[in-house]
Image 1 (tube, rainbow, N blue to C red):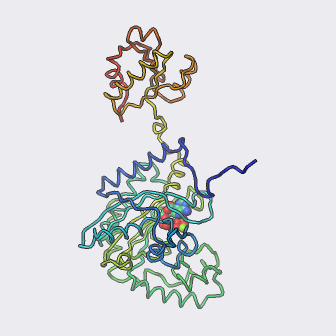
Image 2: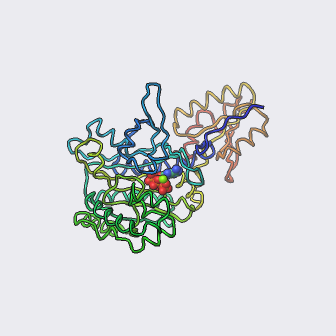
Image 3: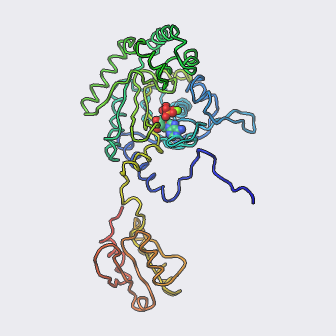
Length: 429
Ligand code: ATP
Ligand code: MG
């Protein structure tokens, strides 16, 4: 027997049964982004590898070991995007839409690719929704991004399950001074650090703060604190952000060890974390990247953004049983027709009804079948009403209308009164 074909490990199908929840989630976020004045941007899934090396940084986990990189037929090195910010920066530069200092507020959605060890909440193809803002350097916009996500958690019913962690990384100058102090301290305790941290000490020392290793964590207790190295400008910025979060009533905790996996952040960094999903607890992460556009060849252009992991948020909705019941009901009315003549009439009638009620979710029985089997399918479809058309009804130019969920009696409705009748009993989305 030949081996059956399978999807790639860590890359999942999202089956018809699951997509209503995905679409509910996605449309909730999309509406919110629109309402806060963000416009969607769509960039290619594949980019030149160089883009990610230059933006994310050569010595990050992503670039060192997680990218899906290949040569195309021209010998160009291409990479499946591991995240969304790099392409946004490339696009604004390429099209010059921030070059004159214009503000751009944008959002994106789509699949991302990282060669990680697949487990619950961690996949090789996963999906993110993110926002990016260019050319605003104040804490007001950092706060807006956080307020937007806070409102989202409220709309989704998961506010109680997530916690905001906040830190400021300072400007690249102050971070540089802190990095030196940290390296000096850690080098004096080199033998007590785990292997990974010893390596990171040379390549990306701030990432040591992020370690899960208990011995290294013990060493870090007395390490220099980032907050003591913050420059005045960053401190004022951070205070401004905190004041706005306080004003909006959003609780947060300062996590001085929050450094984030990507190289390009400065000043604000934040994560929304939950303890309901096990080890993969960060559902949304972001921060400010004021140096990135310049680093990629543009004029100095402040930027700030976040990305949320859709799979983790879907898991959280399921775990907390915050899946609205109505989203899986996709049929309002199920039409059963018996015999060839009734089927033809049913098709013509339902097209007329659709003309008048474009949002009506009307499913016509396909594949014929007995009264009993069609009724069973009508019930299973989740429809609120069944329409019944047989030879008798056809002769009188009426159709049977039967409530499937409530009490109401079955009644006959004249063909030309059907749309008006349905309009009164089906809520139009
Ligand atoms: P982690 O520490 O969990 O690896 P990260 O810092 O690499 O996360 P980001 O690059 O900031 O993650 O991506 C933003 C969000 O995207 C994460 O908070 C998470 O919700 C989601 N995410 C990142 N990597 C994956 C993955 N491999 N599978 C599923 N979701 C992911
Ligand atoms: Mg990661």
